Image 1 (tube, helix red, strand yellow):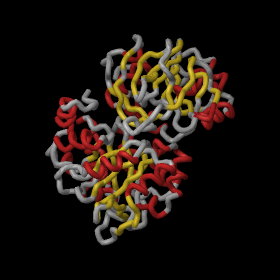
Image 2 (cartoon, rainbow over the protein chains, first blue to last red):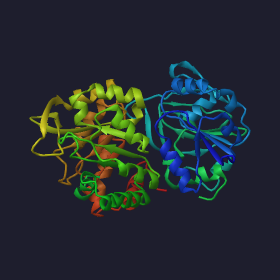
Image 3 (cartoon, rainbow over the protein chains, first blue to last red):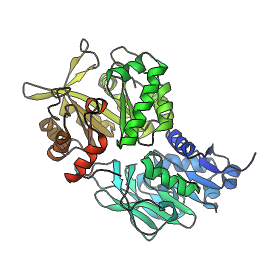
Image 4 (cartoon, each protein chain N blue to C red):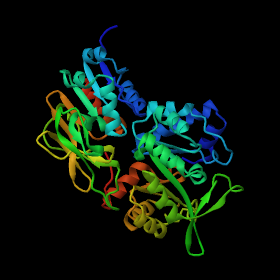
Amino acid sequence: MSSPTLAIIDSGGANIASLMYAFRRLGIDGELTTDAERIRAAQRVILPGVGAARDAMSRLVDLDLVDVIRGLSQPVLGICLGMQLLADASEEEDVECLGIIPGVAGKLRGGTSCPVPNMGWCSVTAAQPDEVLHSIDDGSYFYFVHSYALPVSEHTVATARHAEPFSAMVRRDNFVAAQFHPERSSANGARLLANFAGVTA
Amino acid sequence: MRDGEVVKGVRFRNHRVVGDIVALATRYCEEGADELVFYDITASPDGRTVDRSWVDRVAAVIDIPFCVAGGIRSVADAEDVLNKGADKISVNSPALESPRLINDLARRFGSQCVVLGVDSREQDGAYNVYQYTGDPDKTVAAELATVEWIAEAQDRGIGEVVLNCMNQDGVRQGYDNAQLALIRKHCHVPLIASGGAGSMQHFADTFREAGVDGALAASVFHSAEIDIRDLKRFLADEGIDIRTD
């Protein structure tokens, strides 16, 4: 079996289908896997995630994937909860995460004008240039569904605002992550995934 | 998406009509809709579930979030729909029959996946919940005040509320902003206005007067009376924060 172009780590949760379809529209058949060798061999790796941080981390521990993910040197994209899993920790049930990108995911501050979870399209502002944002207009809208977020830090690539600004994207070395769902963010989301995968949208 | 033909397509499991669902979904997606809701209004009264083969086909072509409503009576129903690529499931009558369903769905999938549909109507100065609204012969008052039901559903873990204001539905006189503004005060999760849209101004009014997070409409888009692109440009010009790219 040849090395996968794109490995999607099966971190549990029910929304993998939309991610697989999004890459298929770009002509890429992602391989959904929990196999350490397949993940290490892939040209690019996606760490998706929906649901609770504790469940997802337990799953990565049970699958023996914690050190595998930490050791990856190819481009890795964390999406939504996957972004928080790449961070140091989440305040959601005080879970220790992978510690790849510094920061602790905190609960969004809410109110009737800023309901939590934050569900919907938010404008995303670049904080520093990044290859995955190539040819995407600053201020473009992306689709968010989350209750926790990483604060703005030196690793922030782009910000968005709920009651307060938060990291919409972060990067450290080969690890980049988005709090929003590019697979559900229309043409700009497709462009971001294409940029990450190194193809044309 | 409550237009007769599309709903019939689901009910009769007709592949030609399912194709129409995909075409319509693609069209709305390209026109800039922010989210689609597929709503089988006859599912609950007949005590059966939707044919779900079309969920896969919709998920394959659209790149915006979509919600499936109608016939979600169990965690297994919801899992089937979400695994096929839907982003959310919406419950209405089954949650009224068994409110525990909300807790079970929220625990299994997270609140963000679980939408509460509420059909509410003013009667003698109070807003009350109605059930089985898909079939006029079976529609009954749920004997529950709308405010109380939404409060309970939030405690049980609902992540979003779509409030269908029955006084306004189908008459195209604008959203029921008095009711929506009242519910807004009691609703700490995203609130979506539904029922009554007839003009672009109606959309602007409900965002401004009721403070809703979204506005849902079917017939004005189906009939192409309102073009989604024009609507979103209009709303942006009115100063409402909305995606127009």
